[in-house]
Image (tube, rainbow, N blue to C red; front, side):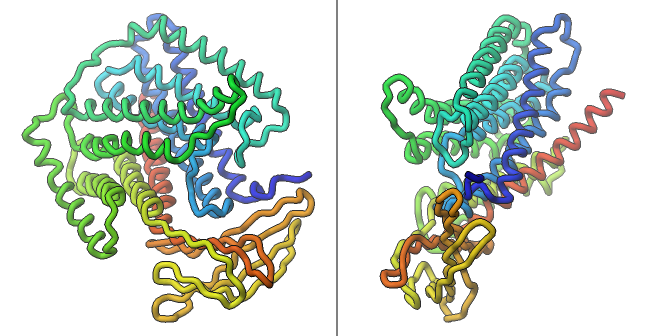
Length: 477
């Protein structure tokens, strides 16, 4: 029958291996946790130092793996979006959330020797969620563009393996973790306090996503009724939790270990507050587009960016270059998410040859359509001219509507023009020469900053991984 046409893409040769590198990293952290819990008289073994490079590597490759999948979904699926809260997307996002909490908790363990039992639990749960992700993809339990199970019975074995592994590891943790509960009391107004708050919020977000992913499967299994949990659920639950997490993420790196003098906190963060307000006001005066969610998103993005630029140029002791780069990437990611989610504009029209449609400041003319042949498909290829306000042609967009005879599938190939401020995105649908073709046009602001942000996070992870491997090398000498 051949490979599914939408999966015949170079990004799909990169996306799954990167995710599985992330999952393998969590398996190493899981193994270290089980070994730590199983061994006697191991209090002097710095297991957390050995664990940290694996966690950083896992988190880093999961980040870039998820980003590659998002890029693929954006240009291949033709829906104008980059994230759809698909259960299989969630399956990789949940380990990433726990990996984020685990990575930051390891910093506290390394510095203060506290939260050791919490780190052991997170490492177990992160790996178990990675196995759950494999189950969702390979079991055939879901209908999704991401799933490709040929033998549904395979899912039974994966589920049994997950249950056995999870049961054993959690029972072992319950029996052996008590001796690792120590030095867990510290001030809320401290670096470790901010990390713990964010840990709790990340775990709550993960639990929320897990509930939204698993609940429809349980309902179908027990009642044979199908329900769907979509974007409204996640937007109304995940977003409100992430807002305080992002605020704390901006403050945390500026606080001291142990206890921060409350009178000094505002003095430390005031430059960031001022810079964030100035940039936000400038942006909204320039664009003259006001939206409460947009304002909150822009404030959060530049709150993170401003804080980390200030940390970068201040002589803060023991600062982590990898952390600064990764946090800058988070800020850029939030900027892209806000722009593309809040100010996206969509137009759907039936267009004939030489017809014209306006979106924002652009006029788009449907100039011609031609039949082309590919290696294993035939396609109709449109030619759209994009004019700016000065009637100057700024680009030609050539979306395709493809038919694959071997699999009897139709697919669309979007055509996208990108710059730092926006994407113009065109999808060619069904139609004919007499009635015209259904055309979907999207104006997507700031989308490119999602990919730039993800790449920046990845680079920050690589820098952190390199420095931690060097620390591990010195320890082993």
